[in-house]
Amino acid sequence: MKKSWLALLPWSPARGMTTAPWREALVRRKEKWLGGEASVIAVGNSGGDLDSIVSAIATAHLVGGVALAAFGSADLALRRDAALLFAHCGIATRADGSIAELAYVDELGPCRGAKKLALVDHNVADERVLGPLAACPVIAVLDHHADEGRYADAPTRVVDPGCGSACSIVAERILDVGDAPDDLIALLLAAIALDTRGFDPKQRKYSERDIRVATAILDRLTGGARFIELRERPLPSSLDLGGAKTVVDLSKALLEARKDVADLDAAQLLRMDYKQAKGGHLEIGCAGVLVDLYELLSRADGRLPEVLREMAAARRVDIMFAMTLASHRDAKTGEPKDRKRKAIVYLPVGNGLLRESRVLEQNLERLPRDLPPDLAELPLFQSQRIVEQGFQAHFADLDNDGLRFSLVPCEVTRKTVLPTLLYFCGQLQ
Ligand SMILES: [Mn+2]
Image 1 (cartoon, rainbow, N blue to C red):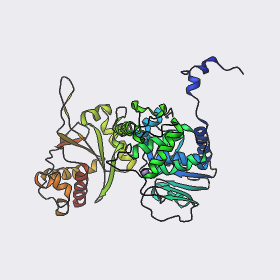
Image 2 (cartoon, rainbow, N blue to C red):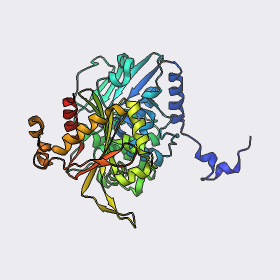
Image 3 (cartoon, helix red, strand yellow):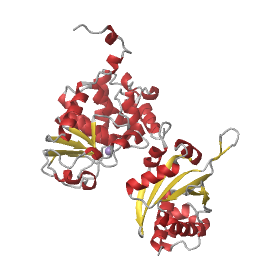
Image 4 (spheres, rainbow, N blue to C red):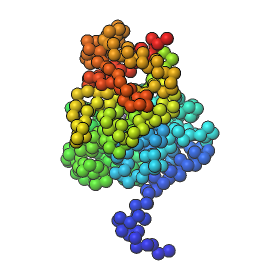
């Protein structure tokens, strides 16, 4: 059949839709595995940073297996560096911001095909994340964390704690194979550039192995230029992310991307940096939010209480807190006026908690009076001056829907607020 002339144009939709065969193969194997077929599962650690994601993808390619992300599919969009890199490399995202090339822990059904594991970027299978999968035989460990000494019989086992990036260890093997796709190797280089901070000699987050592998990748992708220092070598045009010309620029662009939350909604902002813990009989959630309170409210479209309630329900949380910058806005221009304060916003979920949450408020407001000695001793309670001035909290209604809030000094962080909350939760009758 004659090809449409449209397909010959660089901007034609037909062209835009082509996917590299190695990526199509990943998707196909994933679907077969989710359908019950046996496979080798390459999985990264539960932190799920760019290193874990890319090393899992590359290892799955290498072993003809499936790449599994140790987090839910909706959470890929929260890893801003990864989201930006994949978008830049033309890897399409689905409605929830995930990519089809990965499997996600929330997609795993109860009956899964028999399988073997390849652990990347960690060296002990995480049972909390993988469930019964964690008991599968481990055939490969490719990692750069402290060696826990497990799976000594794994046919492939490289654990090199001195190495800056698990992707260096995986890339080493991929380059050996010879026919590895350029765009896959480019992803590995991006993760290595980020983990090594662009081979910054001051931070020294790399070893000879990282240097050797990054050099070999650049040789493959750009040819020649061997006599130029690694940090100054030109990148392939496929990695000109944010105009990056070198690994130094690329690492800066990816680090910068982590803070780029411009297109996230309130629910995503709340999930981005979230901690949960139990104090007494109460389950407490606390989100660190990268935008100010004004912005959080507007991203929630007036539905912040519902968003918090939904999040609390999904995680069985009793009281949901969020910490943001306060940022009073100029009434006329909407411009932020005061970045010197932070805000604590919270919602007790369920009416029964109203009385208890008010007691918690009073305890926080009363600080530094009644600050327990074991908290007062901690360095952060000293450096944030909680010991002398408490949180200077005064709680009030933020709306008519149960949302309460207080301003606190800007040096106050969740690292002091959450332990204090948990302590006072433990004191509740
Ligand atoms: Mn790593």
